[in-house]
Image (cartoon, rainbow, N blue to C red; front, side, top):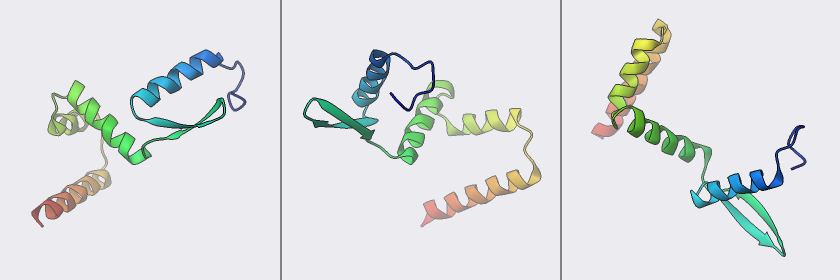
Amino acid sequence: MAAFPEPKPAYNTVLSIIKILENKGFVKHETFCRAHRYSPAISKEEYSHRYLGSVVERYFNNSYLDLVSAFARKENFSVEELEEMRKAIDEAIASERK
């Protein structure tokens, strides 16, 4: 609680959020007497992968192609960014063919 800036959230609010995250498997705890020490249960990379998968499922009909197409239509990518994307796609294709 000391790390939060003013106005600090209510203790019960923080505890409720942590319990939700723990129930979802994102956070774990160790018990010391009557105190708990919380830590991440998954890596940032794993969380990002899960979150992106959830977004693709909910908003893009479980299609990564629809996700990429939506960004391609809305964003003004530079030639360099498009070349980097092409390189990443080519590397993914080469990896899948091995």
